[in-house]
Image (cartoon, rainbow, N blue to C red; front, side, top):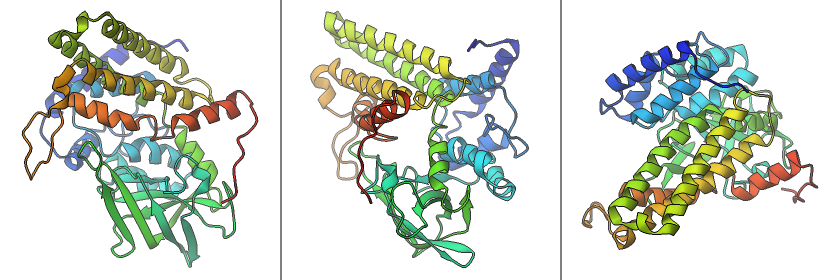
Length: 380
C-alpha cells in the first residue's frame, strides 16, 4: 500500500493536537474523560458507518488521531473495548436496531464495555467455552464464569461468548450475547490483584444473568467472535508503537544516567530494539487497509509482545541494583509502589499471554497461513 500523509491529514493533525493539548491534561477521571472525547466527536472516527455521533475520517486521519493521542500523554482510555471491538462487530453483524441502540452511547462515551471470552478452562482455546445460555422466553439466561476480563469493574455491558445449544462441542452451538452488568445477585465481579499492585483484570460470575440481544444470530457466535478478534490490528498497532518509542527513549536515558550505555552489550540491545520497533511500524503500514490477511494479527502480536517484554527486561537491567528499590518507603496503606521501569518490567510479563498466547499465535499461522496439519483437540 502507498501510505503517506497529505495536506488534509496534516490539517487534521493540527486540529487533533490542538484539542488534545487543551483538554488532555485536565485531570479528569476515566469516565469523565470518555464523555469529554465523545462530546467532541473523537470516538468512533474509524467506524465504517457514521451518523451515531462520531465524525468521519479517512484511514490516514485515523492513524493521525491515534498517533497524536499516544504522543499527547492524554489519560488512558476505558472505552476502547466498546469503540474498537464491540462497535465494528455490530457494524459487521448487528441488526439496525442493535446499531441504533448501542453505537450512540459508545460514541458519546456514556456506556463502557468489557469482553467475556476467556474462562478458567478455556483461555487461549476459546472453542472450549463452558459458559451456557438458556432461552427463557424472549431472553437468554447466562450461567458460568469468565476470567481476565479487562475493566469489568467499570463496565456497563459485557459481550459474552456462551454455549446456547445443549450438547454442542468446540466452535459449534455458541452465541454472541450482550449482557448488562448491573444485575445484582446475577452477576458478581471480583478484581484480580496483579503483581503490579493494580487490578485491571477481573473474574466475572454469571448466575442466570439476563441477555436480551444476540448478535449475528443464535448459534453463529464463533463466526462473530472470530470477526471481532480480527479488528485488533492496523491503526491501534501504530498508536501502540508511539507509546513503545517513548518507553524506549526512557530506557536510553536511564542507561546514560547509570553509565550502562558504556557496556557494548547494552548498546547492541538498545540498537536492536530501536531497529525492531522501526520494522514493526513498516509491517503495520504494509498491512494497513490492504486485503484481509489471516496471519497478520498473529504476526503483529508475536512481534510486539516479545519486543515489549525484552524492553521491560532491559529497563531494569540498565539501572542495576537501584531497580530493586521502589520509589517510596513501605507502609501498611501502600505495601509497595512501582516506578515506571518496574511497572514496565512486571506488566510486560503478561504480554506474551493475554490476547492469545505466543503458542496460540504460532498455531494460527501454521494452520491458516502455512497450511500445516491442524493441531489435535479433544472434545469439550
